[in-house]
Image (tube, rainbow, N blue to C red; front, side):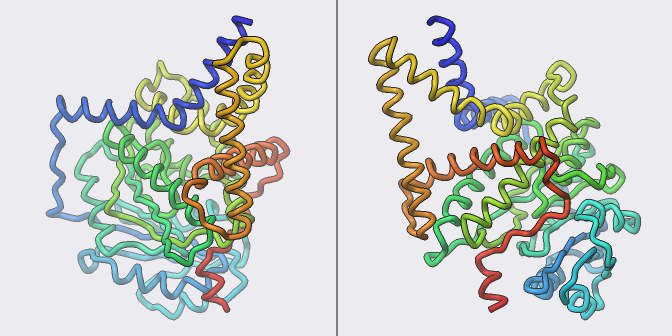
Length: 396
């Protein structure tokens, strides 16, 4: 019985630490660092030349507006080059993009996936800094200036921007959970960056020093995540810039969001295996601490602890007294709230009180499905893109 109690409390602690405790701990560590380490000022007097790469697959609903948004970015004249890579597109994306002489369009009829397309275009990048952005996201005007100022620090190998989910009162319920999740992720990225480094950039908006680019292989699912962490592995850090942000609409439905989450989950398990040397906390003490705490526990440990915690709680509630009975009642209430939130979300009924439990359960169920796909090798790099809420009105 003592062994069961130890396993129960240890498992409960790991889940709490992964989702809440690490955020508290990293926040405290950042405050302590700010007391003892003065933050260096970043010079913006001489901005480097930049290449913006936009990978697009069948994005005719967005591509013209994306190019206009990119051309309107605030950056010194003559220092920004824009590449549109449209490998495999079967709609009017290449033709629409070709109507803008200010950008370079690189189209190939063969569809081999985003990472292969990016690797192909990287051969033509001659600028010291390269910025990656998705075709269905829109950037704030000052984002490039805010990103490139970080490169005044020679130890900065990459810069991650912020992802923002656009919301309004008419959005479907799924957008509320997605937006809340990314707000918390943005907080953790800010804290990670302040402490040492962001542990994995998101493809909506991130940049690297061109010389540090390393092709990760055409079969990699989360190329942005792996590229950025391999840069950290070389001794550089990835900074976070909240004033450089990519804005996109939430998924059009729970089904579309689940599709996206499952493929990301499969990619997460693949990435953990590819980057398994980063689990060596003796070799990468600070980076491994952040990577394990922020990513590995949440992706690969907590989903499998949740059913164990519930099963042990049932046994201990029967055999060990009231404390475990109260915890079991709390667990049952949480999962009932999650289920109720799921039902309401399916009916597009917004309920802020149920956002957290339903999205928590939604993410973990997606991780199970993603893990199954990864084990069976069923997740292809040729992802079927998720439909966004505003895409329905754009194509109507």
